[in-house]
Amino acid sequence: MIVRRIKKYCFIIEIQIIIIFFIFICPSTFNLQAQTNSSYSFIVAGHTYGSHTGSNIGLHPNFLTSLNVGFDSSVHFFVLTGDIVNNSTIESWEQVELELAQYALPYYYVMGNHDDNSIGTTVFEEKFGNTYYSFDYRHERFIILNSTEIDRSISPNQMVFLKDCLNNADDSINAVFIFFHELLWNSLEKYKGVMANSRSRYDQIKTYSNYWSDVNPLLEQYPDKRFYLFAGDVGGNTDAISAFYDNWGHITLLASGMGEVTDENYLVVTVTIDGTVAFKLVPLNAGVTMNDIDYYSVPRQPEFILGDSMVSSNLPYEYSVAQIYNADSYIWELPANASGTSKTNSIQVLFDDNFTSGTISVSASSQSFGNSAPASKAVSLNGTSINNETLDRLEVNIHQNN
Image (cartoon, rainbow, N blue to C red; front, side):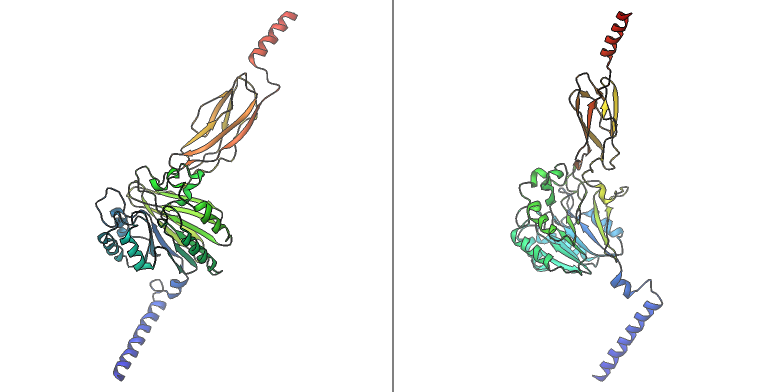
């Protein structure tokens, strides 16, 4: 017994010596202080089974290839935001577990419609205790919700759970990260043109989602908290967007996904020491460059229209707005008795003899994200203007007077 204690004691001393060596001799290799007070990242990946027509039973091959090439060493865990498997079978979940195990990092599941059956529910309950759950990491709270318990909505019992999670988040919690599968916020008309996966498009989700009636009003009750909401129902249709971003003050909406688009990706979220949160999209395919996250949004409203407010008949006038960087066209609306055509950020307008006053408006448009709110400009006929017909009459009168 004594010998065992001595050996154990010597072993502890050896370990301490090794630790001291790494701390003082090789600080860049082993830094205990950096481990607890450094920035950290986590990966958010949506629609991770990939293509509807893929033959894989586990994770999307392109996703695995990208991870195998290497990912940021600051990544501490994964969050898979739904549609993890194409078919929720025991074999599929075992394959996913096998594939994730090679990265030796914790991972968290979000229930998607493809995952949602008795087998998927059992997987969630055995790993996380429920199909919705929460955990804290450093100074952040992570809340995983199940938008399939009531189709494309957050069920009443989950709303109670969410409120409890927020009530219990004291001042030590710097940010709250919330995850669900569908883009529940797409039930707002602003997002009518957002080309998410089919179940998350405006026409398909507007009668289901309770995001704007229940979830967002609850978050608004905590103005001192910063909320980051993540969905994963993008990238899985050939005409779908691959990412999404919007900001509503202290509430930020995000999505990332893969499967059937060239710019499929996963999202790296970085939390710095001071609590700042940053986002980076990582493409899965060679030769693809992702834009900054705010590119993947409904174009912002043009600030104002440049051009004359007072006009004369039958003369061309130029109107323009500043370029909106994620717009691919512009939609101009002209008043009655004015003509002009353009899909760019400028237009030449001709006002005819019957024009008196009206409004010019223009929206920035994206084929994948829809149209911005319009900018507008009031335009009136210049009272001192003289058109060609008036000039002809004046010329006749002058000749007659002579």
